[in-house]
Amino acid sequence: MAAVPAANQAGLLLKVQEAIKAGLPDKALADTVKSEVSHAMGADSEPDSLKEMHDGIVYKFLVNGEWRKSTSGRTISNLTPYDETICYEVQACTREEIDEAYATAHAAQRVWAKTPIWKRAELLHKAATVLRQYAALIATPVLREVGKNRKSAYDEVVRTAELLDFAAEEGVRINGEVMSSDAWVGQKRNKLAIVERVPVGVVLCIPPFNYPINLCGSKIGPALIAGNAVVVKTPTQGAVSTLHLGAAFKIAGAPPGLVNVVTGKGSEIGDYLVQHPGANLISFTGGATGIDVSKKAGMVPLQMELGGKDACIVLPDADLELASTAIVKGGFSYSGQRCTAVKIVFATAEIADALLEKVLAKLAKLTIGHPEENADITAVINKKSADYIESLVMDAESKGATLTTPYKRVGNLIHPLIIDHVKENMKLHWEEPFGPVLPFVRVGDAAEAVALANKSSMGLQGCVFTQDINRAILVANELAAGTIQINGPPARGPDHFPFTGFKDSGIGAQGIKYSIESMSKVKSFVINLPEAAHPQGH
Picture 1: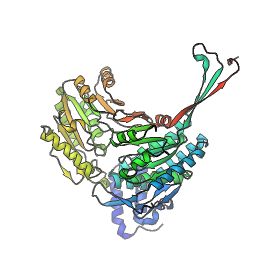
Picture 2: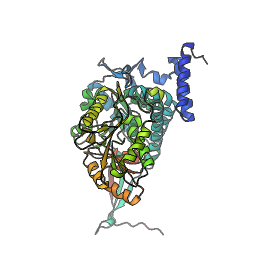
Picture 3: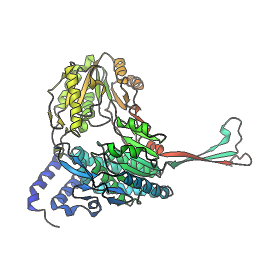
Picture 4: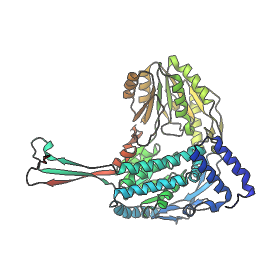
């Protein structure tokens, strides 16, 4: 094997040391070291199956099984969140190229729908194997595009592989049923209904920037096992990461046209994609833009998750050590850029000071810095997001809230901050910061906390901390949100759990089995018998 060039040896050593310091599990550590060694040895270490995706930092899009450059002649630059330098460029696809993506998807879907389910499952398993094989390599664009630390980026790729494997197994167990007419009063048993689930056709998948691989895999996997084809619109920031998921399916042997991945700005091609007659279902994860999508989609079925103002209610008898740990983990993982992050804390007055003290002590232990250093807190996605978060902080402070530590921002890197004594007249009480800033609200009792939480226009998740399980269930029942965690932080997953939002947080349910059901339709065949027929057991 060729030696690592001398000029690259110091950098390689540093990367390996960082990986060891990060405490990666053995497999992840081995893969990371292997990837870094390959990178240090030069561009030739990249497999040909991934080389064809790009020319330098310019990436192509995937349509009909081919990597192409757009006829528009334009590309879109992606900037790293942490230093705002160009990391990649992606194609600005045209309407004609979108038309072709839909056309080839429909052609491929007609064949795919006739493919045995075990063969569909085989493709998902193969794609999962590809993701595992190249997990360390694919983690790099996740780190560069969306600013996740190396360990989290790697974990996202592996989690997606696990999701595809589970979707494959779940899909082969989705069965229809046979119904008889005599269950209805006055009817004879002379009609039998064979009820099956059939594909919807072509699913338009629109994942968000914060999980550009996993939240795309959570759409593609169920869609394909249900017999559909997909057109994926990548997030603008995170596009190259999502393109690598498309590459995994291509390498795994997906028929041409089954998985198409187009790139471009949502402001330029978004409406055309969602209003296209080729879209038979739209699966969208993102923010308030999804409400506009739902208005423009017409009669097309929707599966949508649009964020949340996830409330954490801490009652007087709560285990404060447990609650404070969950608040820091739930509120500040990936710098708070998660739909299921803790977005607001409601603490009863008698324990508020003690809780806050524990939260601040744990918050002070978080590392802040560059994603390559596996820092806990890294830069938010872009300047627009950082400016918005800052505006919420300034508004709260100007109206009397208490900043528990001085506000600090360097570029897009915002230091973690708890804001105490937040009131209803402050924007931070209602709006989703999507960053490492958490409002702390003091309430008189559980009823007040529930009333304030339910005033939000969103209802994705929430959590309740108490040592009284009866009280926990009563409070959870009153909260208007899709999932209520008891003595744990909000979270999406495990990925086979249902994931659903109330109010403006979404439409329909996700979670592997629920997504398969959402991405299929019920079709029945009724057999009319000349006379009543009753099966006998002896």
